[in-house]
Length: 317
Image 1 (cartoon, rainbow, N blue to C red):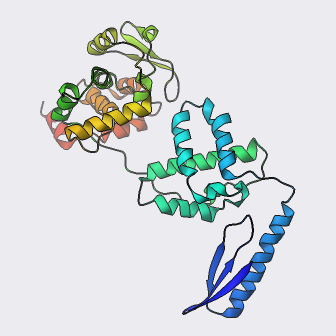
Image 2: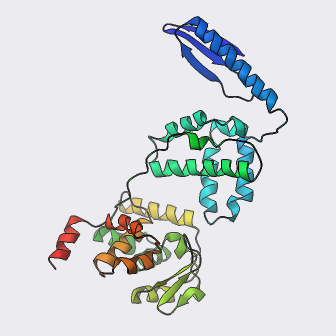
Image 3: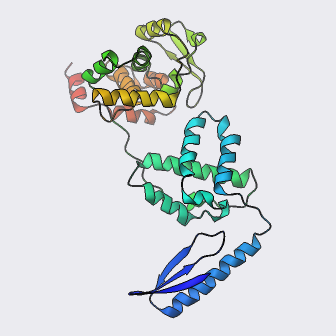
């Protein structure tokens, strides 16, 4: 159905056709608005007639199937599932997948661009893009990927959060810190491991002065252990009986209790790698081995953590 509404500045055309989101456009002249409305409605009805033989699933149904058939086999299953569940709260989740247009995804981007960081929003868009690629290439639905036709938000600057000695002391010795959390924080400081990697450690992975990490971000790797890290691993119960989401929430609650602001558990990894280069004076190659980086440019994020005072102290040592 098409209709025209008289406004103070001209005319507004509105077209509503089943299985399509409403389309609204403004015109100065009545004739232009009427012609656009008739042509647009006719085009949409022809599209409906042309695709009648193809049964497109709703975005929601296709996304849930994707979770159960594709996401479930990924290392990032929980993260991707959580992202998809937030996306399913949007109105377009009830549209057939062929009706989710670049315009709709653009509005989704604009809705959150001032609420979340660019990296976070891009992760949501990446998941939507990956689902559309799967639906087209693997499941055989002739749909275009709407994410490819919109502007992406800029990624945020790398975090340069460094904990002070006082903050580290609170986290390790404060009265609200559990023994498990204390062990994990100490281990992160001594190894530079990702939180997800620490939670997958089993006793058989410890080989004297080295630790085998079977499930890492890119590939399995072995890292050297400091004497302190060796003592921590010998004295604790492995594996740690906590999942990544819960561990992150506990760390944030702990920081809130101690008045430590803008702190993430992952920041301890950056702090550790900075310490390896600055205090233990490891070269880039050795630090890459510990961090599990393939590209030296990845360490630029670590170098961003170096402060002017740190460099001055090093030059005058």
